[in-house]
Image (cartoon, rainbow, N blue to C red; front, side):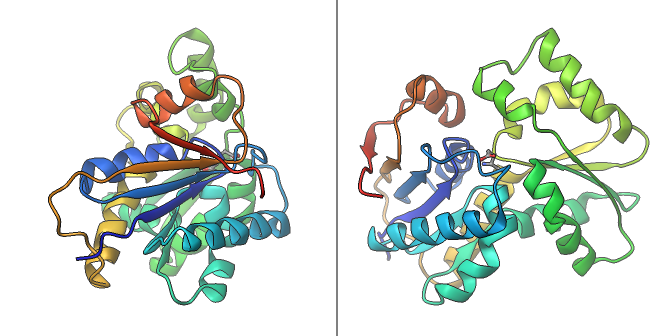
Length: 265
Ligand code: DGL
């Protein structure tokens, strides 16, 4: 039995969608979450900077005794996961791209997969590389959807405006792909808007697939907490921006109880 926490990080609060999925799947695991709210968004930053931030946060989570690190941010996974795996060999580290790609390959019926994400994630081609490494016959169409993040953060997850934006980004996927990876922490909240446009296309929610992957990794490394007590969630952030609580609720689906501001970062 290992009651140390799972460490999860993201550029901001969006990664709480992954925490929500982890809490549902592994309710007795404790979680330490780090949201880099002072320095977000990562989706438009350079690889060097995202690597530097991700290393700093991983060190922080290891100091908090994390038994595994989950990089909940698609952008940080795309740009920094390889570096983190090289630099922190003593702790298992997982990202969102491998599990999302695997799931998409297992679901695709015609070998036509679409990927949506931030500009940085799409430019990095990380999903394409990961999918092609597993099956080179799959065709991939990728598109950056930068307006989705601010819409979700405004709480505009339904209504005319977001429907128009979704139509603008996603119409071109119709009849071209059979599976679409929601490659950003914020997109699971837009599932119903997205599916109105994409209709029959299977949506891959990176939050729930990464929770399943974390479970498998914990099992493999014999790190699961076998206790019956409910786990705790501690959230560390680098800034407390306006509408923090509202946003926390949007992503986590409940109030954040143990909140800590990190000011020596
Ligand atoms: N968390 C980021 C991601 O999943 C989206 C927000 C950002 O750009 O920082 O790609």
